[in-house]
Length: 366
Ligand SMILES: Cc1cc2nc3c(=O)[nH]c(=O)nc-3n(C[C@H](O)[C@H](O)[C@H](O)COP(=O)(O)O)c2cc1C
Image (cartoon, rainbow, N blue to C red):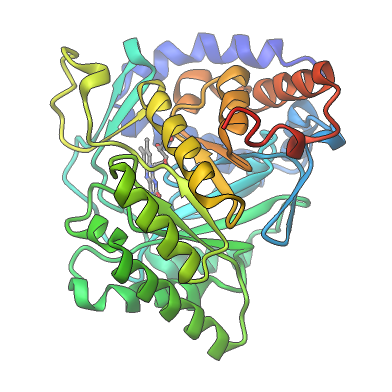
């Protein structure tokens, strides 16, 4: 189906959304997606508009079948309330969260800022979420969209002491394992004090080994991925990746938002505290994925995320070594037709190159 009307509609609506504070606009988008999820037939129509059914896009990762490699990154649907609406936009995977064991309000507002000149966002939300029990109830109520891989991103509460962090991650996994196809252990948000210290190799390997033991004891075997920051230097990245392998992770998500501001220097919002995402992050996340791919040598698959905003950037991320892709910020600027546009572009590039599938290009430029 032709996506032009949907793209045009978003171009008309965008100035209205951009007149709102960034977080309010996001809440409005979530409300629309919720309506889409509840109106009978709405998701079927949206799904027919946005589906890109090319078998070359399908791929198998950590034992799961993905209809295509493009996922929605964590943070968009923190409370797992709009999974059906999001699935209808064409994503192969939706990662909900970050969820913490107990509900928490996050940082004071305003705490999310657009930098439209750069296609970027700075956020310091601080894991605002309704907690794992509310998310579990939501997921239990909702019908699971067919063919969608559901990732669940877990974190720790702000007031949990660092020494007890592993119990928070374990609690998230225990509460949500009936719904999750995979978990992402988020140790890289810049907005929870002390969280990034969990990327230190010994701490990370212990955390992952603990989670593996807890899963074994409960008889659950959901793959666990680790999400890392783009601000690790080469040595720290290699050590964290080795720790992920040692701790039994099934994959790594590279990367979270950055504390660096060089790419947006001089912008009136550049000095806002928080993590920067979107187009200015792309060169760094691409470099981290490439470095990660070279270091890992196939030991773990990489989910490439950070600044993907069109088919070309998605293609480059695959070729740098990402086995799967995610995006968030580009949805703010590109709207609901973006995932299908990117997937069509990927599909056309695979056809042009005579590639049998995504696997033929992963790491081709590493
Ligand atoms: C407003 C906002 C909230 C986010 N919240 C989370 C989160 O809760 N957990 C997480 O792991 N990443 C979170 N992220 C990071 C994204 O998942 C992603 O790693 C990062 O934004 C880079 O991708 P992008 O440039 O495509 O947005 C958030 C990003 C944004 C913009």
